[in-house]
Image (cartoon, rainbow over all chains, first blue to last red; front, top):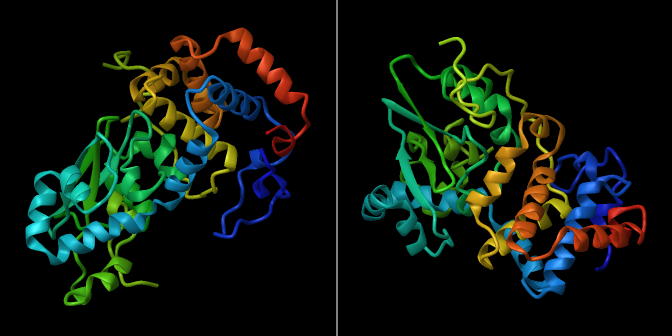
Length: 217
Length: 110
């Protein structure tokens, strides 16, 4: 395989998206990186998968971003018929929009003035990756997984979200087979905007429930 | 109820824990490849989400504290491939030795 530019990053450098590279991008080759190469090559040599499939799968995953979910939310805000279908069966409604949802069940939960929904996976890292991309690091952390279900309001304040005491908080614990996406409340100031503009108001965090939709910054 | 042991280590909901760390890293190429291997070997019928998780959960809390997310995943994918019979431990050991002999960095070895 050709060398990849990711492998030559010096420690402490910042990626084009503004994040540091993982320390294990640095040299030398680790035992687990060694195992990844070996498993991949064995599976290709034995004909179970192809190198092209691997590259295509990485490209597919890289192309997934919270913008997919934001398009779903913006449409739900503006299209009552779609919203009804989404609340009835989110997997089917988003498949019908053209998203590859796979076999998983997907439930959309809607925020209102009275109810705020939050999603967690206490057991592992289950996440609507088909609509939001891969989960952020904090979503997979012990702190979030442990605490979101017992002190959600306190956890939310650590994301800068302070909810009024009269708002009911509902925490949804995902499983491998059942994932959730939050439909955030539509900000008053965004009402009447066209869908392509609305998409910019819908953040990743607002679809996990640790933030609210807000004007693009 | 103080001595309740009715759940395993990965069932973390409700456990005491520290504050949320908001630092984010980009995924490295080798991590994306591990993710792709899980998806593709599942699509090929060699494993599934449940078998991935069964091995991850059997690793125990020490692995969670000392290994990164995709380190645990490649360990689980590899174990699943051995259990399925896609390759055996001898083949894996030989391949890993051969890969390692190519160079000292991921870029040289891959």
